[in-house]
Image (tube, rainbow, N blue to C red; front, side):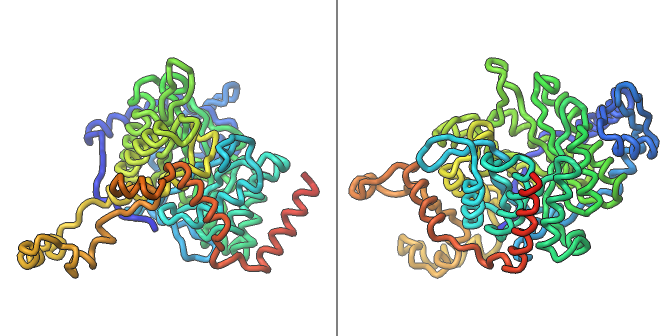
Length: 480
């Protein structure tokens, strides 16, 4: 279940936020944004921007950006197919999701291989069973079917095997429309889908300062169909953005806000999410470092900027450059996840299952990260102080007995106050030895196998809806 946050990290003062904002507006007016999608460029020009047709660079007056931000909603919802699970953006709750679009899978044998449809299906089943993960994202990219229909199969498998909210796919007009049509079957029609959005889109700006044709086509189509969309740049400090984190945040801010502007110009009130996947490039190797401490700082700054503009926000946490679910993986994942949670995001992507900079999805780490997500939930919700929790009467009546174990107050509160991990060991070494205890990785793999062999999606997808979806997929596969 989503959870309220009480603790928060905010790295900037009001004056610093205003300086970042003013610098971003200078980028819009003086440097400009390269817009490679013709309709998006036209929308901006019609609103008052100017465009150099030779370079496709659009320079946008500050007032145009401010006007677009006014119509972007501060609150909206994404729905699951049965309505039981809802992702509420802008209401002060944190939702956690899994690693997304990995091209490889680490199987339960520990070997890494290209992802398959079966992997995608199993990840959805696993996510549906994970109590500390709120959203069933598109974990992996199946490589054993034609690439053109892989996104649509993923959306179908999500509806089939999960009751949680789902990712969509909006890379290009054609693929976006196919996904919307499939979701319309689940919703009962296109108008119903617009009223109760079922797909969460991703329209990634290309750093530095570029809106690509395909991503922006999908952005516009999702906006016009009222499906919420994330705009997550993946700026790399020192490579595709300035090496300074403040400079990165200015560039990222421009990339996000121009995406919001295009969505609003396409459809005023389109649900838009300020997003970030930015971090640093490791200067020793030239590789991305999503598990770096700087990634956590960028996430904190991004969330604070989102609140400055009154926009819901999505961050990333739980990433690691480790090649297996080892100590490095746990350390980096927990560090980035906790920092993102303390930053106050509405939605945190990559919170479970990521290894190898999210190029690989791991079944084992997905199960391990479910516990990490539970720990983070407990930390961020803080300490409740009330007459009941101060427990003065309990202290006065029980202390002389030397133990609170049998107190009704303990029985009433310990399940809410104390997080109990499902896999981590807590106990004496003698007990651990006597049970010939398996290591944590073995326990996680065993847990995963148990879930995949026993879990049933409840409620199942309506048989008539399933039949219509399968028919549509068969038609797409024939033409692929």
